[in-house]
Image 1: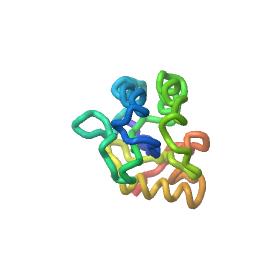
Image 2: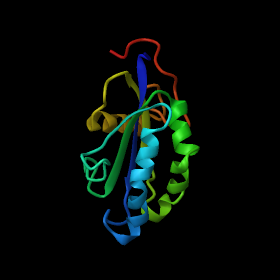
Image 3: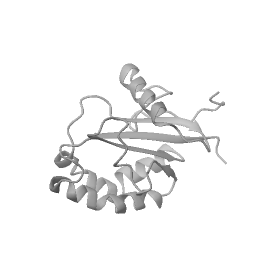
Length: 152
């Protein structure tokens, strides 16, 4: 078993309420996109409520959707994001979400078998915003390899 797995946080600021007609296509596709992630190579875990998604989690504000997941490696996450039906549906993100002028996605390595908290994810995103990509917090385009020593 690998010693490390890749954690990912992605935020989106909604233009409209989650139950609005303007977000209906996005909401109607959530189950399929989440199922696609669940079945993708390298997928480990995703943040969700009993409803099966994370749309009711308001840790970052009630107009901000949060997606947090764990993957075996950067390549698996990249494949899901850019080479699956996820890419097609998210090509419409400008219809549903406001543009965010700073980093809204962050990746970081965690010990295999652990699950990050939302506070840890927020701290990693803030670190990326303040310092740019580092081995502690990075983007998919500026990824760092898994550590070779324990994270403790």
